[in-house]
Image (cartoon, rainbow, N blue to C red; front, side, top):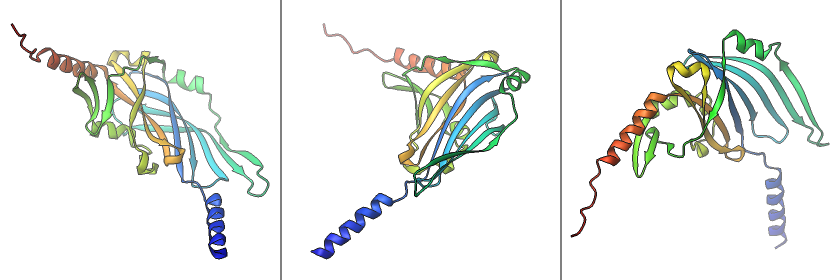
Length: 230
């Protein structure tokens, strides 16, 4: 009996001291766009699976509106956050701070500011891609392959347990008006306890969204109404 109590105490102690799961946390903030590219801030935090060290960074990204492979990143800041294992004292160390003025940088690239649109409840993501739905009918406006090209930038770091993708906001930018682009913010993952949570900004043709909506509405319009009894 005494041996059992000792084993249970050791198990409890080891569980208390167990390291947390590694995770990646990432947020993307659309700053604006011009006719060729969109620009956004990325705030990220990476933890390798420890209570004592994490890395936070802030970067600005310049990415093509049409080609997901074309992207440039400029790191603005890298911060090391550490906790002393004995004293619990926390310390932040600025490992890097860029000498870059964000306002002149955006002005140089003729970036027009972004603004929020109302998030429609009738858009979603499944294995087939991004779609519009209404009364049981679906119309896809972006395939899964196209979507993956935009959102897999950091997904290899994300734990497979929580890659639940959902649309959290929709934005536009004055500079993208001529191409009728809408920027969907897609979130993946389930938080720091599930291996991480990241966001990706996905440019979507507004014309494609309109076509999907029209296709769904056309299907609904052609449904046969049940015959009325006389």
